[in-house]
Length: 457
Image 1 (cartoon, helix red, strand yellow):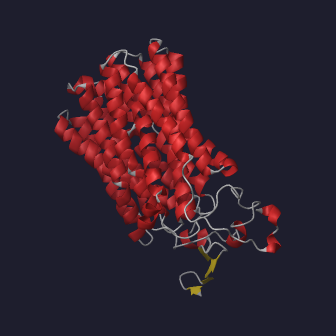
Image 2 (cartoon, one colour; image 1 turned 120 degrees about the horizontal axis):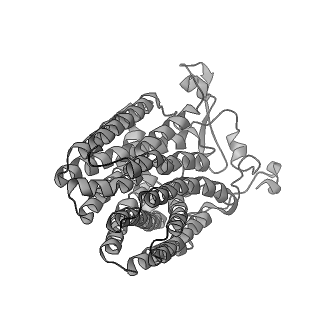
Image 3 (cartoon, helix red, strand yellow; image 1 turned 180 degrees about the vertical axis):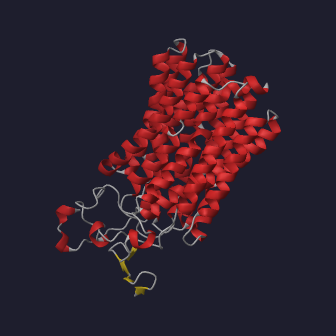
């Protein structure tokens, strides 16, 4: 058939796994520019919203002092934000699937909610107002932006989902570094309004502009420069073969839930998020309760955020060589061990070098799981259901956040407490063990065409 909009011959073909591809349209014909724009724009939007999680941790000592909150109240603001951010991800996926081409609606709504969140934090110290404005609206806004960006990259780069999703989701970690530095060194009760108002304008502008320019491709679109039928079986084109087999058949959400593997992925996210939020809240709370120097707080929170991003990029490459499931287990093991390292640092009077080093190790271990799971969901449950299935899996972050923040609160409010660190570490080890029980559902034996040669698979 022919697409009348650009007079390009468009065909739909299938590979030997039964996956369908829409070929014949270039990215420039669809966008008027390279699809690289659909990587850079989501990346920039992720950078903009990254401060809500790590940045809040760095700003926590100042906010507690300025608003007269207790540490538990401040942790509650962060915890509710994470719950709303994770819980709104299925909504973001649902909106994405129902939009035709333009993605302005979820991105502009997200930008407006993020603006409201930061303005609320700048002008109000009332806990109820901040919980509604920052935690609920800000969390929903960030969740819409996060899921829209992940879905956009997934569909524009179907042949490089792991590496491109890792690149964009990594920005959700290291993008917070500028605000972490500002919050650690410059933010004070006296200038809180000016700093947060200025930040709100920047975040809104970046997210809104990205949303106005972002587009989604046609369903099952595939880049013209790669033969999808050969890509499905030729390891010279697709280096993840044979460690990451495609789905045996499509698994929509209900079928994925019945397989038992989607619930296991949900639990893995719960465990990962519990460790990640424990680390953020522990560092922020300790900085306030025990008076950590600003340099130590900024260095530790910065190391946590940077390694979170770098870990996603490194593991995406490693996953092509040893498989995504195995890499996921390894990252959880590293994250779990890092919690015991933080315990050692805490018992050594929070030695700065030890705190920063183990914070970096923790960030690398906990951050990798999110980007790996996007590719794992796609591989195990099929391309068509990647967005809704990952939306379900990602909501596990809401449960894990509550666990992690409660553990951190127990450490900060109970001096010399050891049990929360041990629990957090064991959660990582449990997650690593759980991945050993995960199996790709309905795995079928596929007979390769003899012309391709067995050595290529």
